[in-house]
Every structure is written in C-alpha cells, then in structure tokens.
Length: 480
Ligand SMILES: [Zn+2]
Image (cartoon, rainbow, N blue to C red; front, side, top):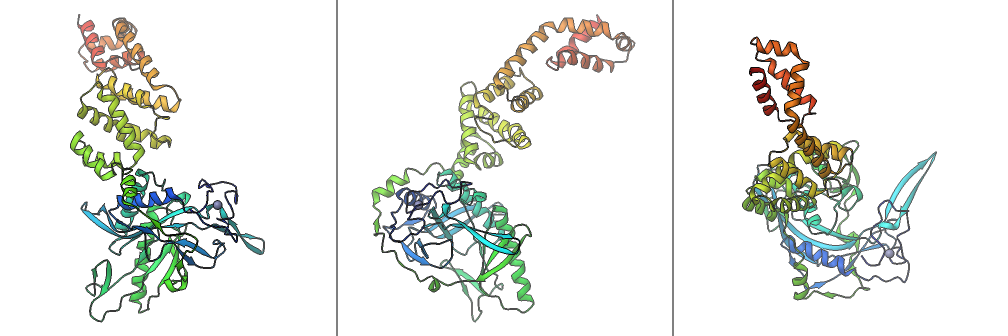
C-alpha cells in the first residue's frame, strides 16, 4: 500500500518481499499506492457509496510483533467511501438490502506463526504480507441472520472478482470476514439511522467479534455458534461482555481471545507523513468507467435477452470466468444458430454435462481444459442430430480424460459412423448369418428377439449406428 513490494507473496520464501517501508524501519516514508486507492473508489461506486472529496490517512496504534512500526496506517474519521448498500437474496428468495457504513483503505500486517519444539515454544514472523493494500468494508448492523451474512460475504466476493479488485480467495487470506454479533430481547430495540437503539430502559447486550474465518461457510457457522452461546449465557443469568473471539474450524467453535479494545485504546492520530489527497470529479468519472456489467445485471440480461431460467442465469453468472466462457461459446454457436436457441444449448451443456465432468475430474471450466471452439463444434453436430447425446458426452469425457483434441475426436467419430451407416446393410447380413437361433426365434413369432439382434449390430458398429435404422433394416431382411 505504501511501498513497491510485490503483493504476490503466497507460498513465497518468508521475508523476501520486504523493504525498509514495510519492515517499518526508522526513517522510511510511506508513498500511497494510487491504483489501490482507485480500486477502493471503484468498489465504493459499485456499492452505491458516497465518495469523499479528500483522502485522509490516520495512524492506528497497537503493539504486536506483526506490526513493526507500532501502528497501522488506516483511515479513522473519514473513510474514502460511505453510506452505500448491496442487495442480496434472502432465504425466502426475496431481495434484502445490506447497508454499508464505510469502505476505507489500509495496509495489512505481517503473518506470525507459533511453533513448539520439545519444551520450547517460539513464534516466527513473515513480513511478506506486511504493507499489502487492504480495503475494509464495514456494514451497518442490519444483517439479521447468519444466512444473510453468508450471502453478503459471497456477494462481496463475487463483486470484487467481477471488478478485478481481488481474487477474493479466502484460503490465501485475500479476503477475510469478521462478523460482529449481538443478541437482543425481542421488542426491546429498534433499528434506526444505521444503529441498533434500545427502547425504554432496556440495556443493549454487548457484541462479540469473530476473527480468523477462512471460508464463506464458516461465516455462517461461526455466527450460528455465537448466537447459541450468547443465548445460553443469558438464559443462565450471566452478563455478556464485549470480546474478540477466534474461529476454530477444526472444532467448529469460537474461542475467547481478548476483551474488545475501544477506539481510545488505539490512540488514533492523523498520519503526518502522507498529505491529504484530493479526489476530483474527473477522477471519479474515469474510475467509474471500470464498472463492468455486474452479476445481478448480467443475470437480468440473460433472462430477458436469452429467455434463460432464473436458476440457469444465477449459475452462469455466479463466477465471472464461467459467464465469460458462456458468452464466448454463445457467440460461436450464434454464427450457425438462432441466438435464443444457441443460448439455451450453451447453458444446458455448461450447467449440465460440462459442470458434471469438471466436478468429477476436479478441473476448472476454461479454454485450456475445454476449448470453446471444439465444444461449439460438438454442440452443433449434436443439434444437427448427427451425434446422439450419449455419444457426444462420451466424446467430451474422452477428450478431457485422455487430453485429446475434442474436435478431432468428433470428426473421427463422424467419419466412422458414416462408414458404418454405409456398411450397415452388410453388417446386418453378418449378424443374421451369425445368429441363426435368434433369427429362428424371431421368425417363429418371438418378436422380442429383435432387440438382441439390434444389440449385436450396435456392438459391431461400436455404438455409432442409428439403432432405429438398424432395426428397420433387420425387420426388412427377416420378413423379406
Ligand atoms: Zn515494501
């Protein structure tokens, strides 16, 4: 955020992406990363926030080995973006609006790991992550269930991926969620002006904050756990205390870490080494051009322009890479088909066969694994009814499993099948000659034997013959 060390630190040798600034050495000065600030503004614009006209950085002090300067450069009173919102889909399928209080810019801290060797315990610190740009999004307390929190987190992740702000990979620490949870008595409080306010002489219960959450599903689980824990304590007559807890994914529980600090404990002060940065209208206008079609808009377009179902549109737009793959495939198919029909075909193939094969083989759906031009060729041959669904699917599987060119496989299969069709007459003769018992059975009235004979033809043609055609020729020859 304030130096030029690479952010590509994942699984890199510890302390190799460092410089005097991110190590917090005396005399090193911070230089704000312009692109990081632009991305923060971009996220604010995409979440309907007001954008401040000036950027003010502040120092947030605390003492911990992962913070070599003794303070983190963050934003306190004024955040770059404020008062926004994002719509999610609630459990009942209806739209619910999550209000956003602020989005501010700050820097990440180093990573410490704790080890044990025999009787001695020690900690190691890796400063590669120190100084990596962070965007903190603070929502207002109008999230009412663990389900909504999970949907909110996954919508934010989808958004940052669509806008190329971050890969949002929680396993790599590129996105973290810290739910703040409180439980209050029914009818004793109200939500007004972005705050939870007590009614009458009711005293609000304090909140807890959960850290180290490593997946979207853990967001939901940790909240459900906390709600149950707090309700139990209240029912036992205990008084809740404001605290920070850690999520233990192995045990599926939250664990006490510390009583929550207040803003005073951080001794915030304006960062004297960074001047106030002005944000001009033309900057905002330029940045707003980076807003691409967002997932919800894309979904609506798929439904209205391509007549796709709500479900298919949701699945196709969930991941930006998939929607791009779909749109590319669609444009290839549209050259030979009506667009709505092509969209239906592309959607059916991707959400059906392609996803199922990709899941089984644990591969990603992309150009490298399944080239779009080859898939389009396969789909068109299937649509022409030259390939059966079974045959088309097995060719697709074969190309992925054996890393063979799909288009080539389809062409070989088509030429084999043409040859077989040409030879069908003689293959039927062969089957009749080789199966005198079945032929006699059929002639003496046992009609069901025809199925067996068709099966023999299919076996000889390795499944490429049209079974109905084979049956017709068989009947013709046997009756003739
Ligand atoms: Zn650095």
